[in-house]
Image 1 (cartoon, chains in turn orange, cyan):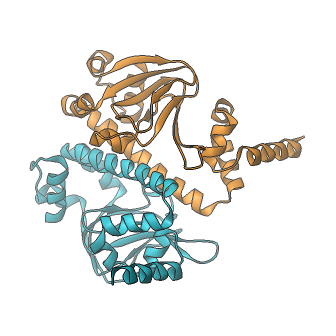
Image 2 (image 1 turned 30 degrees about the horizontal axis):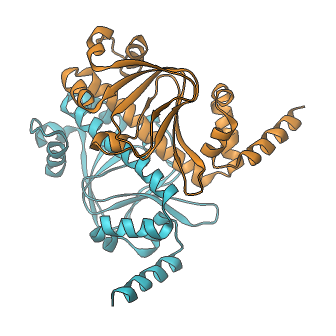
Length: 193
Length: 193
């Protein structure tokens, strides 16, 4: 629970909430690398906060290719939020990219949490405000930049994260084929040497 | 101010805030059709709540074509949120598609508002939670649906809104050329008759 308490403090600037207040709302769970936390088309019952490790959100397109839409490393939240909020089936699958520890909350307790713990109103306001601002920024980058420039930017902003995720998953997130990404990396290496 | 009070009540389910409490934070402004509220590359100082009319957020791409990213009809908020939150220049322009009345708030008062009026924590939490969930849903639709299906869905969900916005603007939002959109509409009309 300590990871969430620290994140709340970082985001809100307030230390007015402790692990013992949050504990009743969450389940602590561990998943092995490649474990599925959510399957596409099944009821979307859980929202995950990543304590350690990394998750990805993806779907399988009409050609059978897995398309990764979002990553969640430490201190990120992940679910199919539209399905979770409305009690619907998930349009996405969620998989652990590494051995991953999460805090899981169901929709009922997620609705209660900010009502009973007022600091969580501010916390989630700021978490979603940032997340929404970031999606607008991403739309702009995808619209404005070439794929190569987008790769360069991503690599310069998240160098350590890039090393953690499989090439195939990264390629689908960036909208590349795995072959194209591999070519791009080779060219970059040659430039450096 | 009544439009915002009503929206707060609708979103939060609480009538615990009145126009007189909100008034000090906002400026009421009116714009003529086609007026520019924000120019791309200029400081992003204002966040707009639409009382009446409709705004659009767009940028001009490398080929000189205006690309519309987002619409804001009545009871929607609009700004380049990343730029607004971080005191940067706007990456987008904002234009009135009709004669439009807005409530405008600057970054300083926007930061104060939820601190001084606690109900606004919940209000903005829910506004952004929905907005973020909607962007995920949009990514999914764009990735999964053909352009024609996306058009059909948009037309069936927002039939009145479709009538309000210029064809050229709608085409850029849907990722069509104006010519393609016009063809599509003609075909639909023929099918009906």
